[in-house]
Length: 158
Image (cartoon, rainbow, N blue to C red; front, side):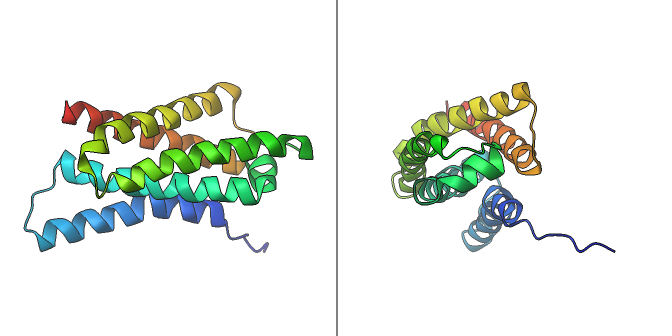
């Protein structure tokens, strides 16, 4: 029987898009005796899924562009690294807005727009071009999931 390879990318996506936000939502609701609502859900998904995930992904793209180039997009040329690094700078920037929204709640709607739009467009692009790798499928699904969450959260905040 073939041994299955551990997918660190899938694990990190599941942590930032599901496990860590849900843990924070449950803990805050329990500690403060709050009810579960879009404000609470949006706050923590914005922090983890947009903020921390994009910030870390951006750092990885800046420092190690070959992972995104080869493992996500199936680019085999080092020529793509300059563009991947520039994508990393954008991800760090949007991620930082998402992180700071935790301490500056007035930024939540704008961070949800920036992060949600980014994930929505990225997810749509993955969908239209048809994913070529398992990691690209993971990226597509998580991008669309986060887009929908940020859309509902933004609508709630109106």
